Length: 176
Image (cartoon, rainbow, N blue to C red):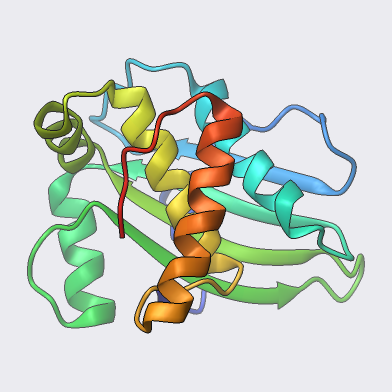
């Protein structure tokens, strides 16, 4: 998990797929970076984030962003915010900002590398959409305060991740 930069990652161009107003008080925005061709149903990724936020039973309206990019994009973020000069599958940028006018909570952004997700799906023998759902859930759990550094935290995060993936119909594919 990374502390969110001062401004949202989506400043290059505005988010392009807001979630449908299914749940009162929850807003998920999906942005696919330029030069990325996403061949999965975006609704599946939005649903993964929605279920994760539903599980949290937040007391106020909340929003999070999902950004899908390439290895170079995520490598540059990883280098800038974690001092790791390599691509990774997912980064979570915690914001925890409250809009003073509406009291809505902006949780932060989940940034996913499409090439890493594709490689992990191929290696794991499952569908790309399942891997992307896993990464959305995993990153969203980080925004909600879950972590996997200590064994007890890891077990709680794994249980939450497995429960949400099960509700999505995704078999247990991601072990922390």
